[in-house]
Image (cartoon, rainbow, N blue to C red; front, top):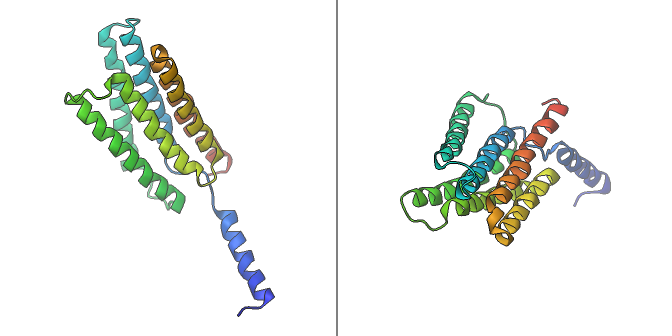
Length: 194
């Protein structure tokens, strides 16, 4: 049995540990920016081509943005300094990888002719996976992630209610909710001196 002063010391130690625990992402915020912009451009281009507001070959702009995001991710993964990451960041990266692998698997199935979801439907699946990642981060106390997830989920609702504007809604959700979250995390990290 411990006495009151010993219990107080233990509680003080736990409080110090909790105070040092950050809900910010010092690792990975730039991925949100790059993939948010790339995904937003993809949904926007599918909307513009699908409604004949852009020529069919302009869809290559979206594919170029997706390729640029992939190349950035590979480059960033190889050149990133091997810094110590927090438990939250490690868990976030795991959830991000799982969500994106599942989404990418569905995407590959679509490319080979399954045609389960179509172009705009794939944007909705991507937005749903992105909201799962942000909700996971939000569960650890990050309110910016919660805001981003809510924006993504609202974009899915708008896309469902107004299917003629689905690409615009999904594009706005990825740009504001996902890329915007990344920008806010980068700003928070720079203000904290990281």
